[in-house]
Amino acid sequence: MSIQYDGLSVTVLRVTPVLSSGNVLALVDITVGPLIIHSCRVIRQPGQQPWVAMPPTQTADGRWYPVIQICDDNLRQAVRDRVLAACGPDVLGSDDQAVAP
Image (cartoon, rainbow, N blue to C red; front, side, top):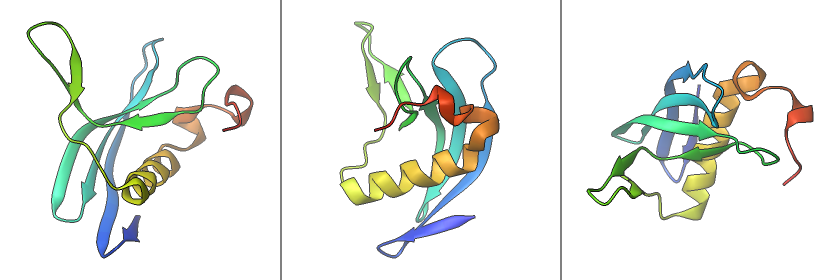
């Protein structure tokens, strides 16, 4: 399933749950218009709502930075909403684990 934002289709291609006990819940491949973005991360830190991070890269000094950034707030929200909807409760857990925004 996809959603449209300003003529761009946002589609989730694959959701891969991460079964470790860390904060990363899933790796997700998406399309935004003609672009394919692999390995977006769905993250939930303790006491927070889940959120979506673009794929990161690590520099020589050990810092992590996103490989791609979505500068448009509305498009970023559309991507977030679509990815989290595709993950569903099996990946995100029950609502009682989440905190209201």
